Length: 199
Image 1 (cartoon, rainbow, N blue to C red):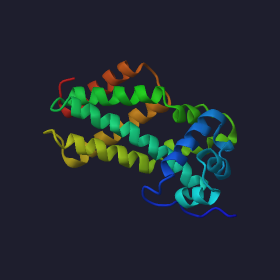
Image 2 (cartoon, rainbow, N blue to C red; image 1 turned 90 degrees about the vertical axis):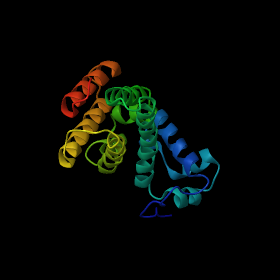
Image 3 (cartoon, rainbow, N blue to C red; image 1 turned 60 degrees about the vertical axis):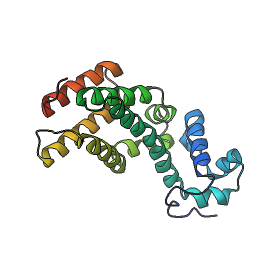
């Protein structure tokens, strides 16, 4: 059987979430190279054709796994801005701290970052060189949240600031250089300097 060229679009069918969860668990436990549609079918209790129908190719599965996890991280950002409504500095601090705390314990991220076998590095570009859709989603959420504040920057400069902040946080997700709390303080200070918010 040949793999379909493209992934199923949208939220998928009734088994999609379970298939993605099984793939994440297997990747964390045994490595991405061990993940096959047949093994996922057994793990979820469906046919291999069902896995193909709901997911598509293995590359599409990789993208689905990363975007599934991205949803968890963006939910942390949304929650931080909700909890500190009206306080830009604390919203940013809470969002960055929450993302970095979650990253530290995230099994998929640990599996990707710690992969040492060539076959297991296929997921890495989704967080680095091919991270365009991930970055766009994160920037859209942050941009939407910052729109609630009166900021002293024109649209282009604000977009540049958002891009830099998102890329900086992703860099610390991939390779932390300090504790989540201190990194959050540092990024909050930087944002405060640029946006004129008390840090």
